[in-house]
Amino acid sequence: MYLVVGLGNPGQEYEHTRHNAGFDAVDILAERHGGRYWKSECGAVTCKIVVADDDVVLAKPQGFMNTSGGPVKHLCGAYGISPEQLIVVHDDLDIDPDRIRAKLGGGSAGHNGLKSIADKLGTRDWLRVRVGIGRPPGRMDAADYVLARPRKEDAEQLAVSCAVAADAVESLIARGLEPTQQQFN
Image (cartoon, rainbow, N blue to C red; front, side, top):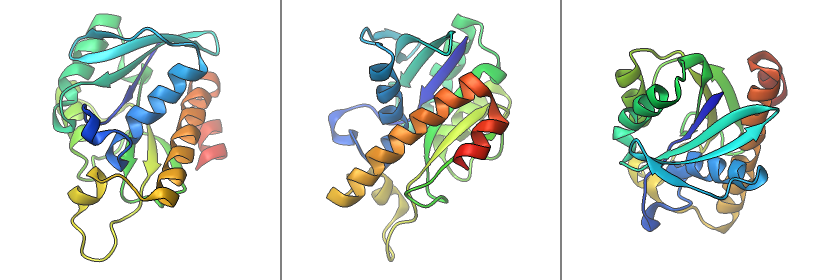
């Protein structure tokens, strides 16, 4: 069994923003694999699907990004998920907008959602699918950039990147980290 957590902020004002790339990728996985029933549990909305004969719980924490760790910890406990069975999908400022990276562990790079999860789980060793969103233009504040909806062309690229992130999650579950990195990194 796997727990796939998409990071984002709840509410219409944050839908399809760069910071909600994780939510969007998880929604794509649910759609692809027939996940239609979402329920509220452990501070998140969850949906169960099957990928490559493995049971998968998709989750979108419903607190703000910097409190994602609590729901993730509670869901891991409720489903008996170890860090090796956790995949977190999130936006990443340090990766170009058309790129995806899969990795195991690492720091938070200033991402408050990752920091919260690491603090609550007491480890940084879980799988990650990083959706590149690039750096803000000029002197634009990073928080304003990640929370803004991208313009049409950039929004289309973000949607494609979220679909590729969903592909990478499927690959992690079906084939493991190294083959996924060879294909997507």
